[in-house]
Length: 264
Ligand SMILES: [Fe+2]
Image (tube, rainbow, N blue to C red; front, side, top):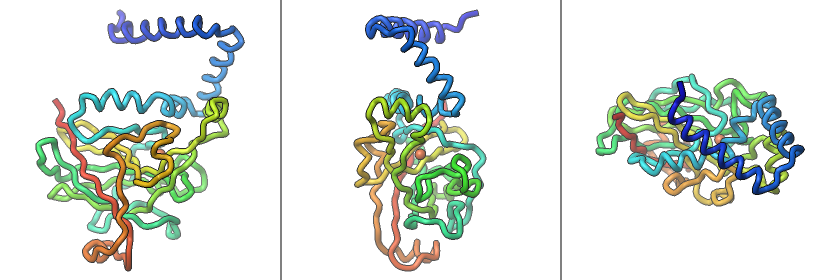
């Protein structure tokens, strides 16, 4: 039995691609090169990366058109479920004793669209280290480093200590790199923190937050930066936070308030 949505979407894609082959006079050798590239992407484990770079932000934009919560963002290729829970008033992302990078307190609130604070909302956070590398993906990094799940307090607030991640280059030595090189594009993404937020009765929310002043905000290889997702890093002293997290002197803070959408 046919699936009506699949028939509608795939048959339209088929028409578009047939027109595309004719429009560009695609030769058989070019067609075979394209199929070989797809096989190479799968063998290299990069099929998600290739699609994420070219298409994911557009799919997210479509969802944002009817989204009444905070702006949604791409998930990217490096999410893994099951990160350790980090708890307590001085919640700190799992890190190496000598973790490089400037300390950052990332804080904010989670509420529903009606403004009601959401206690016990989970923030599943992952980001790159100071070298632009992800634990459990790139070798030589302890498992779950800079991956952690925290929960909001009774007032819907959260605060977690981590580091300011850097811009990084996506993998460029595999088949995705061949495509981007042939297009003459660079491989950089602006610095960012990835998040997934969850709370019973609310739609899971995927976010990605960037930082003001980053040279790749307007020139992201994944074209994924959107208004409302760019944080300002404030550097200064905050006696309450300093005491809570045991930090001396000035340190960085960045704040974001999430709004989740109730499930229908
Ligand atoms: Fe990332």
